[in-house]
Amino acid sequence: MVRKLGVSRIVSILFYNPLQRVPEEILAEGTAIHNRLGFSGTTTYRRFYEFEGELYEIIGMPDRITEDGYVEELKTSSRERVEKALEIGKTQANILCWLTGLRKYKVYVYSPREGKYLRIEEGVHDPLKCREDLEEGIRRIKWIESLYKQEKMGTSTTMEDFLKATNA
Image 1 (cartoon, rainbow, N blue to C red):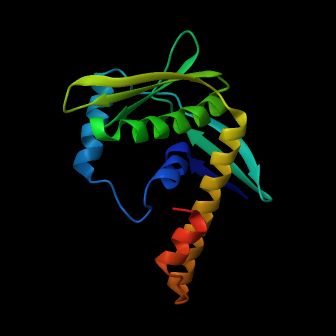
Image 2: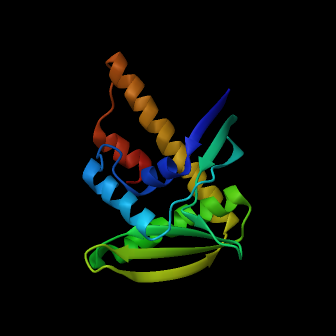
Image 3: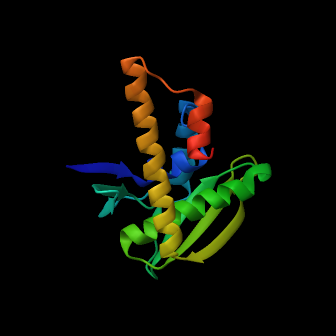
């Protein structure tokens, strides 16, 4: 059986608390900014990845692909969180390079409050980091799914155990 996983889900589990949900109004604002700035990808890419005896179909849609072969990702952020936004964007763009077969990426960090780009950085696809991020993301997703199953069966694990197991 092939399991489908989105790049955004993998990246989210690597950087965010899986128990916290982003408020709808923040998601809507981010989508509006992406659209206004021309970062509204329309092409979905798929690639298979085998890990621990299971086959995964990794699915993702870059924010933008340029004619000169860059995967471009836009992250919105406050000035105080630029470095974190950049780290998240680079991770996502690197995985999207693997997915698309492109070798270069640019990450744009935009401040809605200031109405300008705070940072723009270029990078080159790093296959080793991509593999590490995919596998750690899959491990964490599988762990959360096992916790959910345990909870449904009445044999739950503590959040402390979860955080230790995922190095969160």
